[in-house]
Length: 254
Image (cartoon, rainbow, N blue to C red):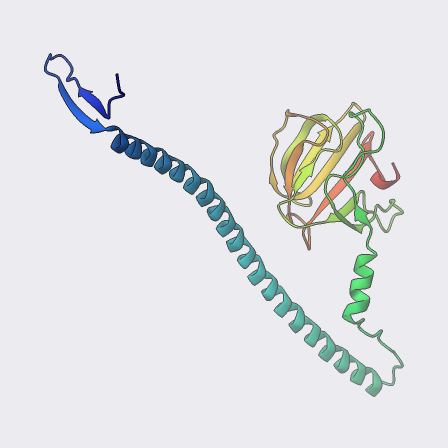
């Protein structure tokens, strides 16, 4: 027997015996079914690309805001540079009138400044070859060292290293341990202290946001906070300390 050229769609109402049928040509049914499937695929593709478009639009908006912020900083720097030059001229005239022989160093040009910037030591996150993840190794963020560790000599003291970086970068634990302190400090801003053993702790300061609470267990490389510019800080950076028996030691010399 030849294949039927029609499909019969049966409509059976619940609880009744009355049945209704609709005859549909095979070709029409196949066209409608294919169109429905293509429509579903189109919807899926649309939402996939729509999510990507929304993500790109969000990134573009963030870049635009960052660009506007950088323009304002550039304008401020230009004003400061202009005021500095004018101040130098005034001081030079005053020293000449007072008969004081003094010379000011020239302000380096951009090429010299950027050359010095390129020579800045990078801060590295990777640990050394040690497999003891309970002892701190490496540094908590990627950036460059803006302030070294300085031993306490009675006049100068800097108990850790400052790592210059943008705000909002994840600050990572340099070893596993327990969160001993996670709160705001008037000097360190949003500060985290991790206890790695009875004698070893690490300190992470000037954060923008804390991601842990006291008592939390943290693994080496776990997120502690987001970098920031809080407390006594003049620019975005992370202050990192390594303490043994509560005595600061140089994390870079460890």
